Image 1 (tube, chains in turn orange, red):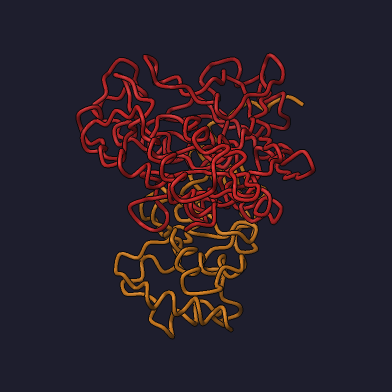
Image 2 (cartoon, one colour; image 1 turned 120 degrees about the vertical axis):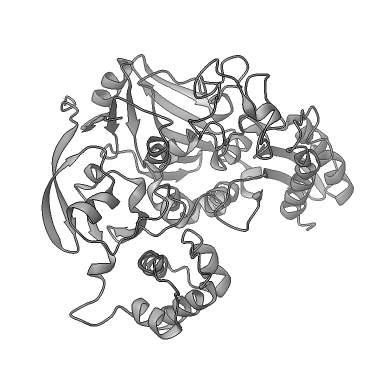
Length: 160
Length: 326
């Protein structure tokens, strides 16, 4: 099979939160920019754009990734879940409810990424202890320093 | 810079295209490539996506392990067979990056990640590795993170990875498919010393595609360990790291493997330390005397001088852990 001609503009189908979207994108568009600027799903936050802060964490096929470190055109086969798709029919996801209960935030900017990362962590089975939660949440920075309450929220969600 | 993109339907198609040498590059997990694009460090004319190629399998048998180049770091780190038979590999992977990045990054791409030298990543400064002939400000500048081993008057950038250090300790090989056919390269010979051409980082040619990594089964591999010392407890590159493996019979070390990271321009094997361990009694004194020579030949450049003391201690602690003397 030959390689299709490389293109600077591509038409792709992006599946996000259970809905298919047909998008015409510059090849350079990150998944993060496609979500925010093209689909207007601004819950996924842009922090560093270098994979260092975790504010853009989403799930791809159930696994947490950083949306700033991948091109949207590379995600045509994937199912993306963002913070907007987490609650079910108005009921908060257990991780969202735990963040509310434990005040796992201050300014809130990192929170969607923290929550999506915690959902991924629980699926990976990495909430065995507070130390394990800290280690496996280390890809998400909180400049307000709400870490104590974030760990408490993840611990509670793991027990739910 | 704009680039064009295509997803490769087969390895030969991808290899043929990139081998033309017209500025096309492979992209796999993309976690380092996207950073380099954002920072303007790299500007490929085309990115050829290899993620659909069937190279994700992790096979473990009596001969050893075969990691498909597109296996994700997290998949290998979590594989029970890898954790049992090659713990240094699983530990090196778990000490790398963040959980999100480990879900994205491929094994082949991880080996080819570029240095974190501040000057390489900052296009406003000169850098021989990024732009040949422009100079190396790290030699007398902000070089706390830079290499004390394997440097040259043109570059002292540290090889940043963990996995490659573990693989070098275990005599692993990379399998490469290229325009000229298939070949096998020891991981230890994949990366080139900077010498007078720091921009040529590996022995790979345009179009060469890493398809798999193989790790031979060995008694020492089962008794192996990775220790990473860094500025913070998680999600940080190494200041010094040690991949160690011991084959012990009774109270005697039959064979040892030691490689180090965070201190050298390429993944760095310490054969003289291994020789100082082989055939000796497994006791604290043996480990101390062998590890003491870890930084032999080091050429510190100022702010990185602390690594000359840190490296032997890192190696000794890793050896004590794997030797049951911690």
